[in-house]
Image 1: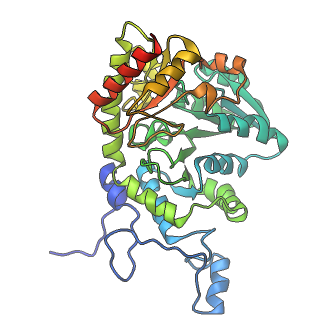
Image 2: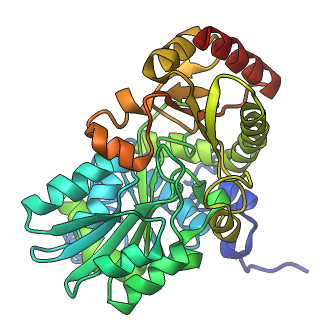
Image 3: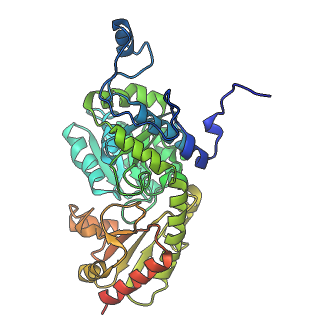
Length: 402
């Protein structure tokens, strides 16, 4: 017996969604997703063009507004995240900026966790005030701090969890309860956890943000970002902002991201298994490593929150090297397999020194408040054999603590 009913992709497992979700085939029936490198689109008539621009007829108008390849990437991410809508952007920071600035207005107030990427702090601390948007940074680990920071004009809360680079966690459900009681929306940067290990929308978040540059691409090829939210948020705030300001994702980059998504589940879980072994190994050393931070370990300061909202600790391990900056530099320069780079989520193991790279613009006092020491390094575990990564780390640590 045959049926014409199409399967519902929302009912597929994440692994199946990552391979098939959102695929649109042209008249040629291609296996791989088609790459539509075009700025514009043609219309059958002037009447059709008018209807498209009035949003009275579905279809594409201009690739800054929408593009078939980009739409496939957006739909695949929407299915994976379980969101109503998704919009792709040129970079992760474009996603952060577009989501917040499309929603906030002069006179509004935003509360954000102080533990976050340096560029995100710039948006909250510097960019928002330029437009008359008040901002408050809090120690996001304690729900009481969020409660105390809320004001009558608070319209948004924003945080990363796990945070860059300390892997500090925020209780998503707890903050969402506080924010929603005041009528504020919850914006979560979920880059470090990835959608494979944490689904913020399921814990009360309203908007989820990714730098697709990281795990979604996963091979160091392209920049990209994506915002996932309700249809109401996209229709009333985000879509017009993206259309008019132009932080659009290139169709080519969207195609690369589609290819990256096909292996996201396999990569993240394999990298996480290696990260667990590496974190345990580093924590067991008697010399060279002063502290290891990994959400999947029982000794993580917020292990209970990790167990509540994450299905794994991720593939980033942060640790402090004894001897400060000088020892950390000796360690980095002695590595032979792990490469020095400020990116993360790659198939190659990458490592960076936050004090002099991603968080170098913060004043020493701010870094100290966040627990970012001069000896801290952030390791993004790749797909190399874990034995080779450990041997490389041990070799470099021996050079660092001579």
